[in-house]
Length: 481
Ligand SMILES: *Cc1c(COP(=O)(O)O)cnc(C)c1O
Image (cartoon, rainbow, N blue to C red; front, side, top):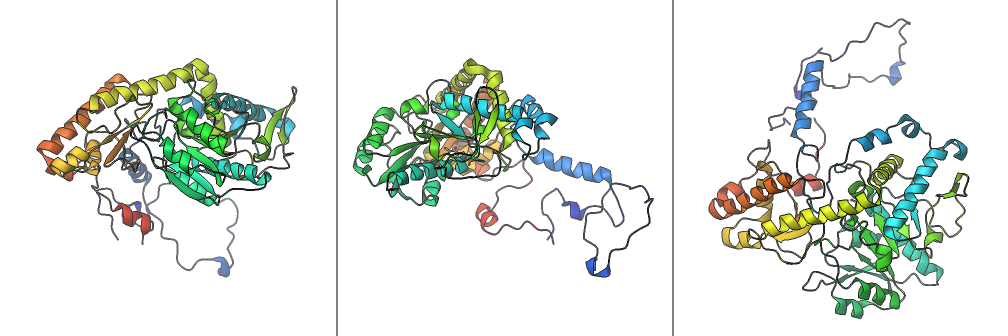
């Protein structure tokens, strides 16, 4: 099948015999493979010149949109700009060239980085110990809930249920189910927090714990957090903090102080690793001293003289990943935290919150604002007005924003807001960028009212318009024939 877009596949380019390289002639006799090992027909490889090759991939790369090309307000994802110096640090040969089987005494520097990063993350979380093994946020969630299960099991009963508010990220219920728990959904109240009455009713000694994101996916800090953690602990349950939104609160408030027992961080969201497209991340999990005995092995301990790998945790849930986690990502987080310092991290959170409130207050004139409260690092608008009055959906407006040079916000999430648009500006954007974005959103809202057809047909400036996303997910066709 031929590509229908303006960019041909590399297989459709070139001509037989054309090459992008020339190897020097061999200076040893040619060896002939036994016939049984040889393929009957030569592989069908692209035959292109070096120039064609370079232009092809450069053209493709220019079609990508990333944080390095423009503003990327994808709510819940914290798509902030990550300074390039941290990539340089992670690639230092003394770090990137280490073999994971190196004996402890030859890897003291690397172990020190892991140990000190653990101390920093424990401090930011307000908790005792941290495992670096989980490779992503969702992986950290699974580890965290398995820790909760191990804790209850050690007291004779793993319990049956996990409570999760209806505003939660989809990974939370998926995690609880994978860890063998029944998921009980809690409604949100009119102010966007947990409905405390519903929690009180649902909370009993069959409940292993509550998974909560605070600020939640509406960008709202739960005003009843003390009451909530008190209710869950009162019935012997534990509290899991989804730390994907840590960028909003680091340095200001600590999950441990709020009463949480387990916290995961997404280093790739909050602590300087570029993400999207499935690149490596890290989801360290911090816990109270009470849960520390169950952590995955190894931990990195320091005895005042040297760093060593501690496998001696008899009640550990075991390993959850090979070696010590995604070490390069840990190095970037370590360098980021060291270079920002405590005051710098606090300022990053403060600026992220300021930017979000600035954009929210300018956009509430153009879209519905279902929860009219000061937000934290992100906020959720609704395109209900445009849908009802003009027949224009949030998806149409999100696509139209691409014509203005912006990555669309997260749409149709959280599920509790009709026609949701979730916007997270992050702290690394300038006022000029935020103003341009506000201007573009306002222009799209006006178009939805005055020229709905233009918005329905968007995007107009990309090689392809609307994709059949369901078919792409269910019947992916990734091969060229
Ligand atoms: C991103 C996110 C997750 C999942 O994290 P990954 O690193 O993508 O696995 C979980 N919860 C919330 C609120 C998130 O935003």
